[in-house]
Structures are given as structure tokens and as C-alpha cells.
Image: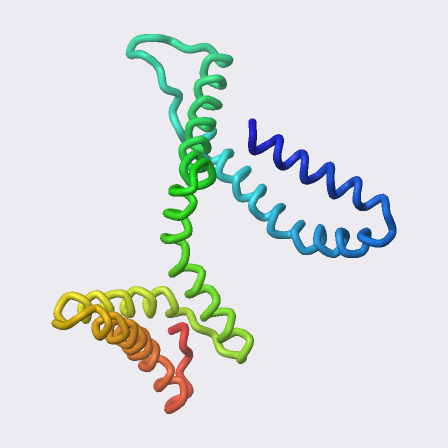
Length: 184
């Protein structure tokens, strides 16, 4: 409820500011830029809701026959619990948000790496594998490299770089040398 109140307050403030000509252009540009991601997220949540409502069985006690209304309410309750569980820790607490950010950071950087390659005109389908092999190499350096943290941490980062680079070097070399398709 508090989250919805904050969102409603922000929407109301933007609508009020939009009445003046000065901030109108900036607000319209912001809304155009924010509309696509917001609609994408809402459509993904709606698609997940359809899947949950269609495939998740309605919880009930053994031997109890449920009517259509009770089945619908049970599935809606299951849907509410799924979304509540998903958003409770991620948005409800500072620690939960930090934990979500900690888990999302490698994926964000992997997506940025793929976007950088796309801007250069290259297609990189192996970015998740590069991320995993970089993580394995960093973990191996961190575990097996003796010494103080001041030395081990930069070497672990270098190991991650080398692990991901070696994994991406093979298809890159095959494409450069033989013109092979990097997807195959």
C-alpha cells in the first residue's frame, strides 16, 4: 500500500508539473523514455500471471470439492503469494534491495558487454559462458593463490578477465581465421 501511495504521489507531481510549459518537454521526454521499460515489465508480469493462473493447481484440502469461484479465488491467492514473495524482499527492505543488486550486477555487466559488442557490429552469443568461466577463474585464483588480499584481489580480477577472454577467443579466432559463424 505504501509503494502504491508513493507511485501515485510521483504520478500526481508529474501531472501537476506538466501543467507548466517549462518542465513539460522534459517530463514528456522522460515519460517517453520510461514508458517502454515500464510497459515491458508490466507485460512480463501479466504473462507470468497468465501462466500461474493456468498451470498452478488450486490448493485445497484432500477430499474437498471446490466450485468454480473457490478455484478462482485459490488461484488468485496463489498468484498474490507468488508476486508478494518475489517483491517482498527485493523492494521492501534495504538489505533485500542490496541482495537483489548484488545478484543482478554480474548480469547487468554481461548485458552491457553484449551491448558494447552490438555497437561495434559484433554478435556475441557466448556472453553468459564468458561470465561463468570468468567467475570460475576468479574463484580458482581466490582459493588457490596464497598471499594478502591486496595482491589476491587484483589477480582474481585478472583471472576473471583471462577466463572470459579465453572462452570468447575460440569463436573469435574461428570467425577471423575461417569466417565461421559465431552462433554455430
